[in-house]
Image (tube, rainbow, N blue to C red):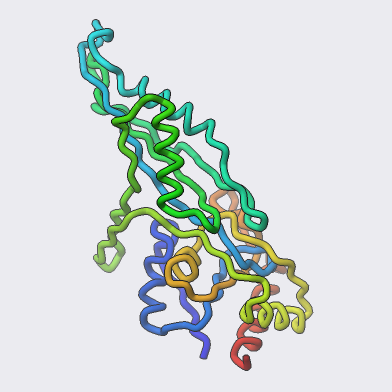
Length: 261
């Protein structure tokens, strides 16, 4: 049988809702319907959200030399992080480290040298990267900044759904890939070609629910969907009609190919 899941919350916690669906139906394979321009996806970047905190010593802003400004310490840490050489993957591409938030502690700081500073980074992950390798990379940057007491940890989601269910977990969403020779890939490819589609292989550059289905649960997963991922999260987000119709044809073709496999 084929089960269609329309799950919520993916933008906030990748895979959280899909996890419950998968625990219920126990799938052999998963097809992610995110945008792929009707190409067949067999890998994707993961995502981690990290919180770094530097620690200083407060003093009155009229005599800043009597304190240690934690924002200045964070400036040095950021400089080292920005200098990191991101890893690359032959199929998925480059890793990404993006500073998304920066705030002093206390905030606002009225006539006081900040004793703390908190930075949030989003790191796009490649197949093969682990929590250990990521934290090692950041600790090296912190050490080069001579900021040994800087803390580094995964951010934590704190999300309540419209049903009242609360979800809290570390923001680590694993990268994933499936070999081109895998039966799921080859059967889906054959089905799409029989339907007069001619997809190439590609990878998702954004993070999807496959971070759970493939990255965490280990279920063979592919992606196929209409339009471009570059149309997501922009003004005038849209979907081309020919892409929508092609996706409908493609989903039927993949289902037919897998259900007789």
